[in-house]
Length: 76
Length: 377
Image (cartoon, rainbow over the protein chains, first blue to last red):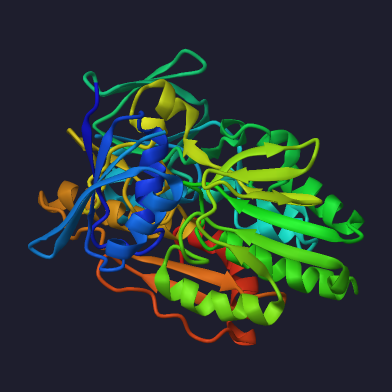
């Protein structure tokens, strides 16, 4: 059964939000949804670029009170 | 009161020494006993492995006897922990002993798991173990020309190590007089040459100047060691003659066997450095799941915060400060230049142009480390 896992990468620079997301994605199961929390504006472009290249699914991306909430479903 | 430190690496050793000094009176009076359990009687300076790979240090220079690193009042036992029983404030060890504690600090580090990527163990070299660094050095000395490829799997220790290694490869082959016969190719998982934007902005033109080729958005999927090809999750295939891998890492085997966290990374409060759900258990260094670099530097600054807080709670009942995410890492930009990467949870690193002075400071620090780990610097 799929689940939503929060990856809190707010206020991190090294290795940074996208690396945290990829690390967590490796541990997830196909169908799982990960919600990345990031304060890095770059994540808005970096994450979809990686998701599209690898072939996962971008579920949603929204800014709530200065924090980007980006949901991705693992597809393979 | 019994304080137990599990793990004798950078974080555990700095914590035990720092704490012993802060609580010297209480320790002398027999009110507090500090014990360390480790799986080794030796202490390794892990950043030195990069220099071993390039023939600039020898393995014996990386080690000291662990007992000689510790304050004499610390009870040190080479007896690896096998089980954690948080409900009873106990750990069990390989020898069958049980150690009880009032405060526990876990500093059990991380380990490489190249076996997670098909073909990686057979097809690549790395500099994350003594044996690996020695073997890589031999391969580099024997290399006569062709493509040297680096792949970066995550998570991994020391986020700047891949960049440093590429600059050192450039200078290594230049010094051997065969740089024109060697193609250096760098493959990185994110869409820049480094995950930290300012490091990437600095490193990219340096790569261009050195003639280092790079492919980003390359997440290693598998290695064909027979035909010498690496494949990425994104669909790339790259031929190589020598493959240097930054292997994927997991938390310690003992953390994983005790189900302390996913892939062995222990869920930890990023400010208090306490294990989630256990206020008398601290976690520092590579063992945590907090989103900071897995480096000796992070372990060092975390250990200082935990030591100050434990001592303060014992003396006054109140901790003094939270971990602010501070990390300071040197970045070698070749054989004779270096810069550094300093940041915390709030401040992005701002890199200075590389200089010889910072390189020589790093070389000096390779020896000064032994004063850091004793809790003196």
